[in-house]
Amino acid sequence: MNIVDIYNNQDSIIRFIPKNTQFLLLGESTHGTRELYEIRSKITQELVEYNDFNIIFFETDWLNVIHINQYIQSDTSSFDTASETLNNINKFPEWMWKNDIIIELIEWLKVHNQKMEKKIYVLGMDCYLLVESYHYIIGFLENMDIELCNKIKKDLHFLNSYDNTQKFMHFVVHHPDQSLVSFYENYFQHILITIQNKYDTYFEFCKEKNIDTLYLITLEQSAEVMINSFEYFKKQYSEPPGSNVSWNTRDQHMLMTLMKLNEKIPNSKMIIWAHNSHISDSTATNNSSQEFTKNDTWNLGQMSRAILPNTYIIGFGTYQGTVTAASKWGNKHEQFVLQLPIKDSIEYYIYKLAQERYMTNCVINLRKKNDLIEFNQYTKQRIIGVIYNFNNELQSHYISSIFSNHYDLYIFISYTHALIS
Image (cartoon, rainbow, N blue to C red):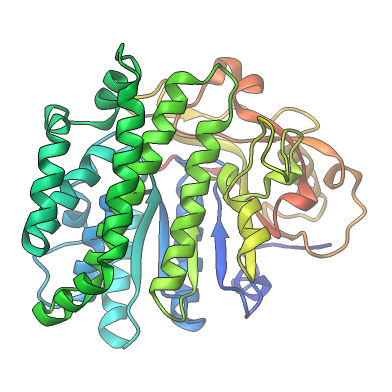
């Protein structure tokens, strides 16, 4: 097992990543820790600059970050600053992306793109924005295919009554006429198939009108989001407590998004920013499945390892400090003091391991054979998302996993600070 101090060895993280890596999954143990953003940004910049990576995915919706590309790829952008490209992110938890580290990364990417011929893309891979995706499709088709545009507007006019997806889905799922569910499912599929069938025609139109083909890819992606967003929220409303179906729908959408862009953008190498719970290999947990036939959790990390070539997974963890989160969904974010990890958790063991080596922070290479019992049996591991339930931390924020199978590399910071938006 290799364990190195990340601050005494500045190049220690990058040198572990195999040169043939095409899909690099960068995790985080919380959504609100400053150091984890800083380290991921540094890794991202070095891989873009020295290893030819050209697509960066964030764990947010495609339409939330689509404007970033115009800003970093064009000298004639309609945006004056990186922060302006994030103005359309105005829903909880916006602080995850509207912060100084992300803004600095966007500015760096713009400068880099000015020096290089190969474009860098920043994209989203989540599936919350059904209503917003519908409006994008209508707006795009108004200039491309007015006949199809008018038909969709007529058939889906009811969508105009809702300003967000949750309200629309609540109406559909609780409507006494459940044929509505089948209608929307079939219609959204019809939109996607129609767009795919006309894709070549639309592509030629874009070439003639000098329209960036990324906006055409966005058209198809918006149709995909409508389908998967509908499925995700339907399952959230209809499945019993404890069901993993909605979670699995999200992660499958993430995987399909990576696969789509791998096909659409030649010679792509991707960096994926997402929570440890998404990017780690869920077959290492005690509620996983490789057959997808039971009510088990499967995630982006598991599917990427199984399907995508040259996948490498980096997880992150922390011991103590502060974190930005909310007390419940939709509440204003605030700073919390992290409780110390429970005894016999992975975080506890790594903290002691680092102390024995006079380290504060470290990188652990899990591809190297190791005989630590704690790394090779089911052990508790802490995960905190946008909600921090410190009064019920054991039940809310710990999973059991075989650590050595969960990641390829693990970055541990003993004391961390809350992300400030």
